[in-house]
Image (cartoon, rainbow, N blue to C red; front, top):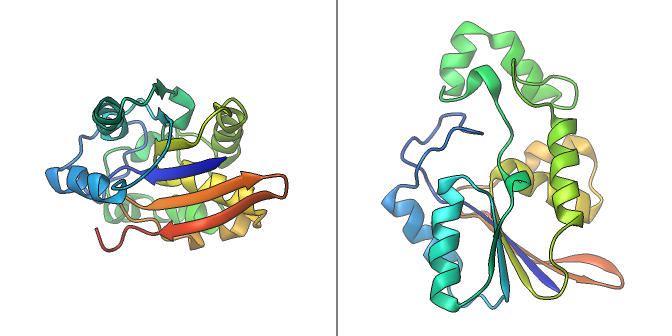
Length: 191
């Protein structure tokens, strides 16, 4: 079975923490997602419900006749009080909290937001519920992609932020009796 993970493209509000915030795609972000999926051969699409993922997923699925499932568990981490703010704005008001989150997201959640352990449980539960009868495209966000990448390849927790994922990043895996094998990694920097 082949599984492709696709991060949404650039949004209309780049640089802000937009976990639960429903920030729309920018035109360039939509174009980058079309480019990243050119030639992709899957039979099913699963998407986060946030419009920066879902609207593209609907258009792609309709174009190819692929079934689409919108799965709330694939949404981004809830950044709580940081939603809609840039790192610079947060650092100006609460540098200790943001630096602690960057240093150790396992034990330092955003104020009023979701902890990394909660995000991991949610994403891995969605992964276990995924359709297994066809090659699959999952359109999601940076946090869920990093967690699943880490999980599938058995990487340590501290490796989470070392994975560079720009908008429209794409990661492909083959799942077989051996486990997960990474077959393509495009960090999205060229989009």
